[in-house]
Image (tube, rainbow, N blue to C red; front, top):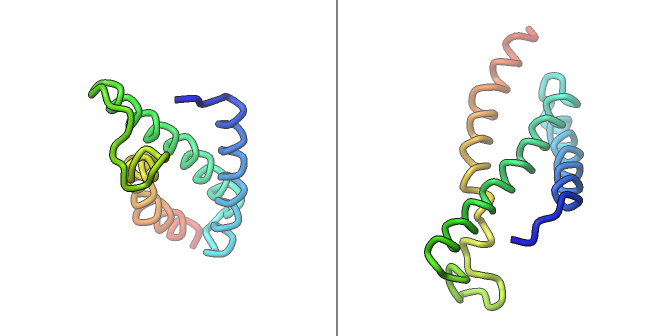
Length: 105
């Protein structure tokens, strides 16, 4: 799937920085730590979603999931990271952050 270690590290670093910014804006407890960890995990989990979709395509013997977006592999290739990041993010925002807020009080 043409992934590089540098791309993963760079993506995780940017994701961590944006996670920290988002945690600060939303006033998460321990925003620097929780934002950095959440952002980094989102980067890694998004990569897992991308690799999962690539594995499904390879097993099925197809190159693209559709032709709605020419030269981009289809709609699923645009959103394959959400396969894993959406449930993780819901869990963090619904369970982890409220628990941290209650622990800080």
